[in-house]
Length: 183
Image (cartoon, rainbow, N blue to C red):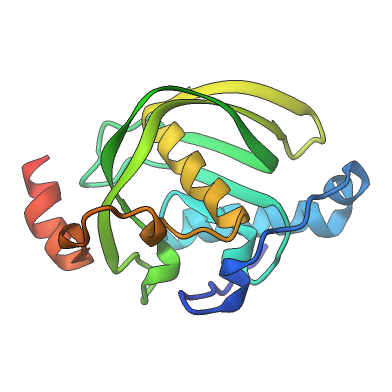
């Protein structure tokens, strides 16, 4: 396993729709190794909670999620998953404005830019896991938010594309000082 280098906003790969993977490609040692390196990068570098393959220069439909407690989110439950060829099949309820950042919009291993993004609080997703098993599951809360963010990456969409009020943009330092202090 190795720490992977992230692509940054402005890199054309972040605006491309990712290629779907076949079951044989999913099970290939190269893909399995990539999944492990993506997970290792997220957990060891404490970059964020999700990493899509385009964010490390690979235009394939693969994302890894590794949610961990943090000082500003101490009560969050650990959550790990791999999404391959994911599709949101249904949404439940209305969208809510949620704070979001992206590790491709930052330096020093952190998201430097945050804004409020409308996201569904509950979604149904069809995806293949790292074992090549087709799954259909419902997610809500933070899990639903990060899954929507990562699926957007796989479709060439960035969180800034969803921002309705540009006045909500702020830097990481200001976000931590003003928003997370209040939460």
